[in-house]
Image (cartoon, rainbow, N blue to C red; front, side, top):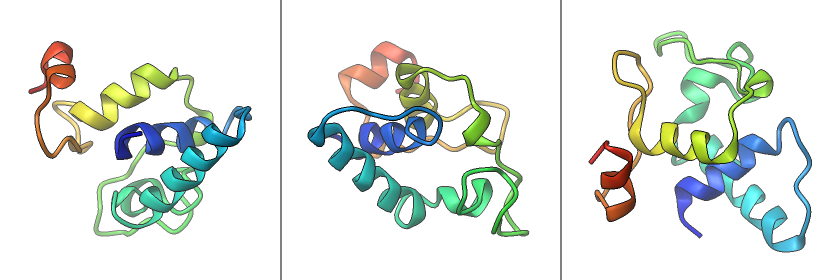
Length: 104
């Protein structure tokens, strides 16, 4: 499982429970990435609500707890970023998948 997919799954679990031990483990890994290596907490806050614990020097992030994004859309946003916004891309090595998404 890729870091981006694990992170996306963790964010989806904020609003909907995930079934299965493997998916739960991936979601836990994603939470760790969200809070540490991903840098997500700087803009989205430790609670992923866009407010709580946000680094005031960072651009404001959206409230991920109220997001209606599906898992695949969330993976694309984390992978490709959102052009024209402060949301950066997080794909370190362009792949066939990211090229197919149009963000490589």
